Length: 114
Image 1 (cartoon, rainbow, N blue to C red):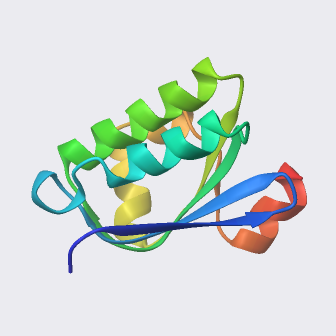
Image 2: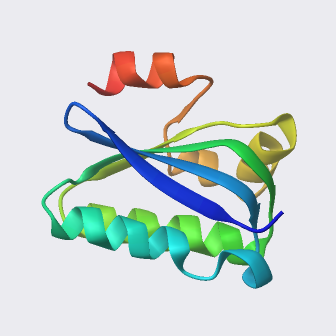
């Protein structure tokens, strides 16, 4: 399954639902483009839902870090909703779990992030 990202709003947050494979072949810059559009429109707070992401390679890891940088440069925040055990392990191995706040569920994230 190729990568797909869509955005929805909940209060002052933009929730980005990602699905598929975050790889060089599948992801390209779709996530980053979506982040740029919303930060450009004055929406700097993001929750990235990785629940439907099947796999992340080194390109996908780089995309997460680049998106974080874009959001932080604009004075915002980007947090993650964890996803599968494999995705959470990838975040730990790459130490991205130290950069991002990672939540188990959307409800937990919304409660704390609002």
